Image (tube, rainbow, N blue to C red; front, side):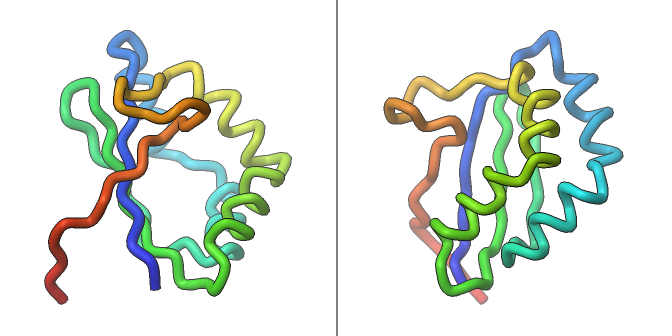
Length: 107
């Protein structure tokens, strides 16, 4: 299993709408995540910073993420949510959600 933590900036003027749409994530988007081995997925908000955590239980993280990105319903979902976000300054060129290194874990 792979643990993944990421951050992105939430545009402050969209905070309420972001939380509203995430209170009712489309079932098709959730099914796609599950089909591609995403488990224990959470997004937390601290001011204008969004922190996501997920566990990937498959054998090929990159292939599963590519399949999720290719899903038409997920693409429609991102058309709703992407304008509410922007990469953090630390993000690499082309990186949307910025990956965080794991520095400690306790089971």
